[in-house]
Length: 386
Image (cartoon, rainbow, N blue to C red):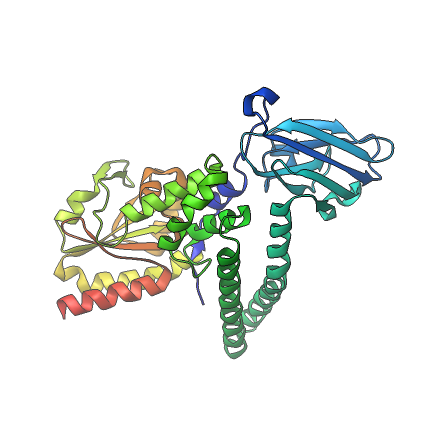
């Protein structure tokens, strides 16, 4: 069962990112959106339109607002810079409705007390998002149920049942990956495909390769070239390509636990191989991998193999306490900027733990996530030194 710990901040950044701005009609020519609809039981309430999606309504930026009329009707007309996802929500409520906006005339119909259940018509992109959601929802529901069951069986120390649930989860994840891949193949230049490709950052979301994703970028750029998700995806794929196997590890200066600058290239040059471990104190799969790291250190330290851990923590005390408790007695670094760290961005790190094996010349030899990556690194070192 895959245990990569997906970095939460990155996913928040993706989901909450600004999709487009509303400015004067003359600025973008024909890029006009039109949303109208009817929300029962909403008379007199103020309805807000925001470019932010999966964050609390209280934290969302407001792009426009309108009052729901006595008959429940409402209307927004404005200009958009590029197509993307917005949200509608009612003042004082926590629920919201994601709405894809382009030049299509969109109609929303529902109840103001449950705006998230409203029906949206008029947009082909919205229809594709609904198609994907309806396809994957049964799998997600089954996964959630199995995760609850595996937690219960683990508490009861029922390893046989836990293993059975784990195998079922693996099977469902494979089905989900296949479903995602088929959707992308059928609708390669849709907004939903752009969103799905952005999940490549998790490095385990789908079967599609990075090279395939790069090949889809030109077609997606025709419509979404200014969309921040597209821009972010291009940057991520470019950084990943530059930090793939056989590439030269970027020249980084990182700070250790004493706040001293460490030139990582100096570590490479003074060792035969270096394992660079990207982790975080709150990441359970990272902590689970530490015993394997320690065993590799014990076995190969005499051959000049070194380890350096770079943390995605933001809290200094939590970071240093985890190092102490875990007895991680090798070089520890962090600038305490989380995923905003230059190291994480330049190496396209998006899943914890990520392990990169680098030779003494700074060339990347192996790269992967979780325990499987460490097993491959261990096998490689064993072939080299035994």
